[in-house]
Image 1: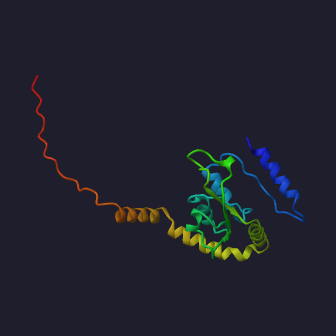
Image 2 (image 1 turned 90 degrees about the vertical axis):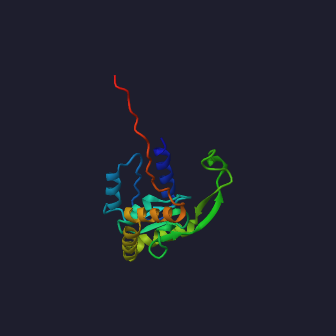
Image 3 (image 1 turned 90 degrees about the horizontal axis):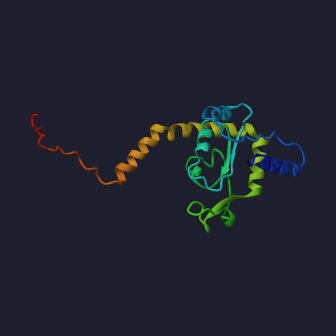
Amino acid sequence: MDREPVLGKLDDIRKTVRGSLPNIYLLHGDISDSEMNELYNHSKVKCMISLTKGEGFGRPLLEFSLTNKPIIASAWSGQVDFLDRELCILVGGSLQEVHKSAAIDKVIISGSKWFTPDDQAVSTALKNIYKNHKQFLIPAKKLGFRNRNEFSLDKMQNKLSDILTNNLPNFPTQIELNIPKLVLPQL
């Protein structure tokens, strides 16, 4: 439903830029897990850019980090738990109140704040990755290695188990019940 307006906005942005631009592809609609994997690992995909306003955890960023490719992301929200400032580009910005038109009762609460990235910092990051891509490959590999080891399913299960063990009261132990067996009358 919004594909054409998004393409229009991309064209409007493209017209404001002097000089050459890299190719821009719009992926729109449902994408399967295998298609997503193929996209992450495609040779033409050189970097992931996510300027989220407040993502919670940011699973696509964690998944993409495993490809050992550079990442540019907002320096705010859940992804800062696994995106190391030394190993990727985290873009600064500010928290700004959610516009009233975006408020949704019990979902996006009026008066809450979203992260807004600094336009100049985003521009600098994009130019830096574009011009100096190779210098970001070793840090990206380090990030991929670290995340592959620290955020695997096994590691997350162990962390959850530790959290539950340390923060929940002891679970009751199972007791044996001595309930008499019901004897049914003979018919």
